[in-house]
Length: 539
Image (cartoon, rainbow, N blue to C red; front, side, top):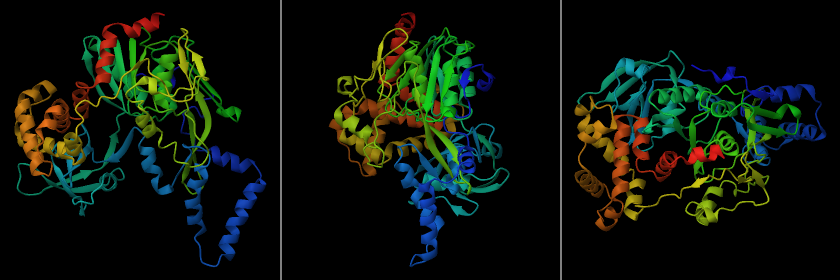
């Protein structure tokens, strides 16, 4: 395994380049500075309320409720994390958590195991995909008030603790009991890896956590062993995470001396620069990066480094536009804040942070909706670029700052097949329920199915599959409207097959199945087959 933390990157200083880590910031400041007049005023106000207010007031609770509003007047990404939520929030970016080792869906008001993580505690005691978890340690996991958060809190727990599960299995009339000892469960960042075409490998990176670079490098190596010398890195929907992981990933593709990213803050300790060290193993491989309006922060660092260095293609739609660096600082009561301490800049010198006003005016959060209403998702000419923030790539191409990464190849959002029937079916959750019931029906013959091609030979043919779904939907409140159904035919079938793949094979095959009908993915494959990514590199 290649460890990015041992790379000889020029990374100065490393302390805060990690993006959202470093928990000694506040303590250091508070212990070395005298209180300012404003700080003394704040302390006096709290003391006055505590001692003289007409009613009894929990000052700690008052402060707890005031901090989020205070931070909201700084920028959109500085945030407060209560002590009770800190562990759960950090788990999102750690490379493991303690639990039973299953992925699940909530179907028909019950918890259905969609995947049993290999080597985890649940696999060791015999849980299977399709099992319905009825209760855990006597706590019911059924009913119309069931939420993902409630399931997580019930199934996760300290390492070594026991979860007594009551399970309903498709081939058993009686509830089954399983004693599962919770253990550390790996959290994957690279959740889909496969050969998209001869010589072209595909990998989807869903977040930038502690172990993302190692997963990424191992995935590249695996694809290379299968004959890949071109790679599609899918960052759509990836909202970011640890900045250093994006830097290590970009280093794999860039020649020595190429800048990856730099940051500037109000104090020198927050000013950093990262430059490729020339030790990347894939410097001669072609690369295409997929982004969309939800690709943010570390995703934009990676895409920006590839684009500004003319190293490969960026395909999709304009990214989110988050160019602010947060440092996580733990407060004395074990709560924390993520405080914006710097802005980062891509190699060409652009800060891709979109405009915001201090204070919670709400417009920042509605930006994606405004883009949609403005027509940006369908026509690149509708994109509002700030032409005053013009920069040049290494090869002289023009790029713009101040509002995300604009792709080299724009791909409009595909709404083909979006009809009122399709929307009603999706909003009712009927596609997921139908797919689950189909997998339940064929569960005995699915035990030997390991690939999508094998799965397609087991499930019904398209006409039968669609007719069965339409009948199922009609019984469940969505009447058949064949004019619209025929318009949505390919979309409905594609979604059903992908959801069947999710239940029967797992998430990676779900993504592979979805990509079969995805215009952005197909445009990227076509561009690589035509050598467009290598043309940019050679200029």
